[in-house]
Amino acid sequence: MVYYCKFGSPSVEFSDQNIQLYSLRKSAEAWNELVNWVENREELDKAKDRMVFILNCFGLSLAQLLGQNDPVDSNFRYPIDMLKYILDSAAIDSAKKRDLETTFSDFNKFYNAAHHFGSPKYRKIDELTIDKLNNFRRMVIDIWDAVCGLHDANGSQHSVSEVIIFNDFS
Image 1 (spheres, helix red, strand yellow):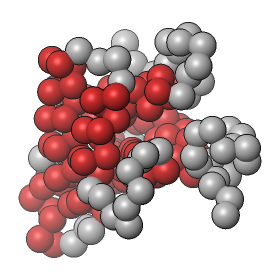
Image 2 (cartoon, rainbow, N blue to C red):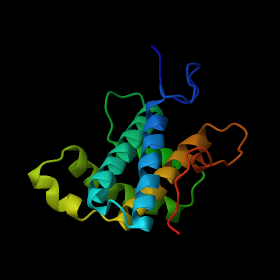
Image 3 (cartoon, rainbow, N blue to C red):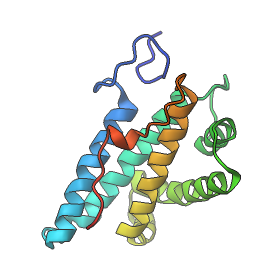
Image 4 (cartoon, helix red, strand yellow):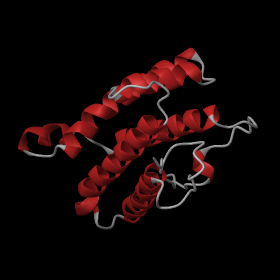
């Protein structure tokens, strides 16, 4: 069996075959476009669609990242359970861990509404703001950094945000 996304697998290369990194890269491209739209007050009528796309890319990236790097051999575990295990294993202080778990729980409500989109989910999507999405963006980077840190034999403490660039608002 070939693992296209698992850290430590001999087949891993940071290419488009790495689904979780590809999704993160697409979220960054869409995020940077959104930042540009907001700062230039252009195409804001498309902002909500773009935000939902970014949210879905975040979710796909995290689902793949957590699932492929879950050390527990089971047929199925919820992403929050995988995240808790990874955060317990990572060098993260308890306050940061609680913040990531709380933010992930909030994120998951929006992600479920966005990828099961339909009229019953519109109210939740209406609550999605750029500030909330920005908070989710920071959470995604922190989770990526925690997972990468578990596999970094050198302890170099690099961030995925050094490879995948998300622009900030000016």
